[in-house]
Length: 157
Image (cartoon, rainbow, N blue to C red; front, side, top):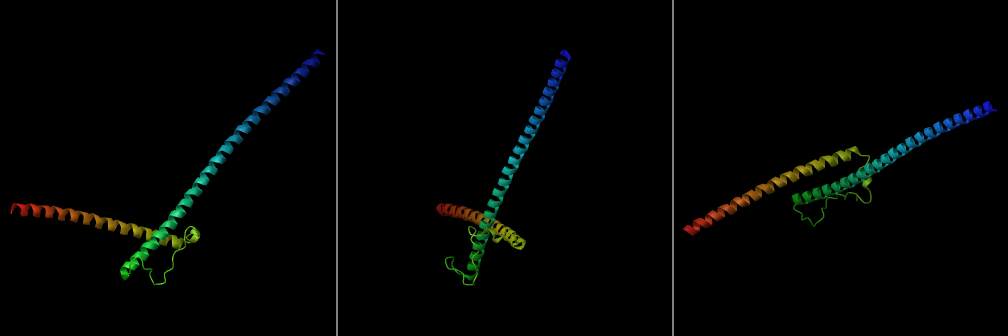
C-alpha cells in the first residue's frame, strides 16, 4: 500500500513537472507570438508611413508638374509678348489635374525623367533670377550711395 501510494505520488509529481514544463513552453510561445505581433504591427506602421510619404511625394510631383507647366506657359507668353492674362493660342493642352488623376506620371519613366529635368532647369533659372536680383540690389545700393555723394557735393557748392 505504501509502495503504491509512493508510486502514485511519484506519478503525480511527474505529471506536475510535465504540466509545469508545458506551461513554461506555452508561456515562451506566447511571449514569442506577442513579440512577433509587435514586430508585425511595427512593420505595418512603417508600411503605412511609407505609403503616406509616397502619397505626399506624388502630390508634390503633381504640384511641381503644374508649376512647371505654368512657368513654361508664362515664358512662352513672355517670348511672344502676350500678357499673362491672355491664354496662349498655340493649342497647348492643360496638364491633367492632380486631384483627378495623379497617376498621369506613374508607370512612365520618360515622363518622370522629363519632370526631373524640368525641375532642375527651373531651379537653375530661379538661381539665375536670384543672382540678377542680388546684382540689382547691389546696383541700387551703389546708385543710392552715388546720389548721396552728389547731394553732398551739391550742398558744398
